[in-house]
Image (cartoon, rainbow, N blue to C red; front, side, top):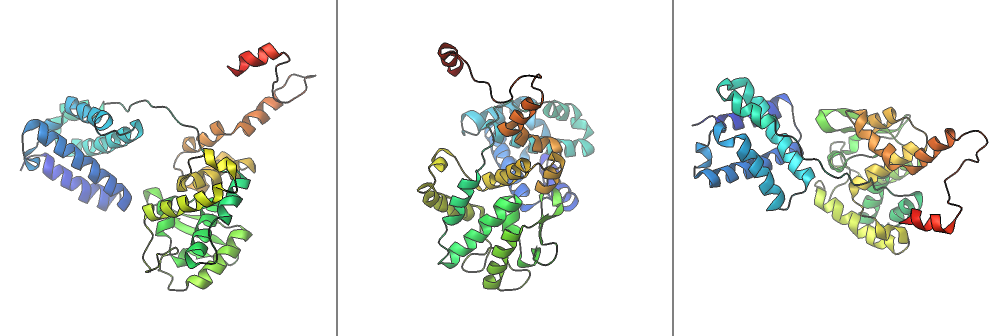
Length: 329
């Protein structure tokens, strides 16, 4: 057996599972990356996957594989960079036990991520949130479950994976009401609940019943909802909400949009970015800075503070129709 197979196996069992205790979502993503890479390398070299060596995954082949993902499989630059990050993680691990491949490993680690355009953050206004919350049919069990789930998502900003993993016992509705979840990097955090969320969750828990370890938002058979099922339910409710709220027509809304909405509501309430980072479970405050870039309200407040004395604050408006036409181009 060559170097690649045992290194790849040890990377998953020792590094990801035993040492880093990576989530099932992370392990599945890494698994898919190396499935694609191994098959690609096997096709190009004519070797069986188990016969591949680390030298067969040199920098030119990795670069060609990344181009293959983007141009032939239609992956976005974001997905390409995510796959590259997984490959970098494997080669960093391989460097510890295989110094004979140091040159190959260093060249692979030197492959940079591809620069990409960053789309602006999408979030929902209060009117849009209210329309979405009114969309589920609360005359049905599924509608009441979905309503409770959307209320919790909008208020707490939990990731979809965190919502899926929640159990009944993770919600505490007494003094200091909060919900506990296990986030990225196996970091546990507690998020406070507002009075409205507490009322909704109290009603849902009373109807839900079950044991503390049971899923908080189950299917009809009692199992956990999948990511696809939650996104499908959200899309269904959005279709109903759009009939009463026209501004939703121009927005691509997913469960992650509800997370962005929670962050923007905190930002508009004057909450410090460092606190928002803790609230969302961001490891670095720089990740939370995207909300500052997306929020025109914060920028207008900033420019109002630096307006020269004697100048009326507010947004600039051209005084001439010709200038207005040119500015609009």
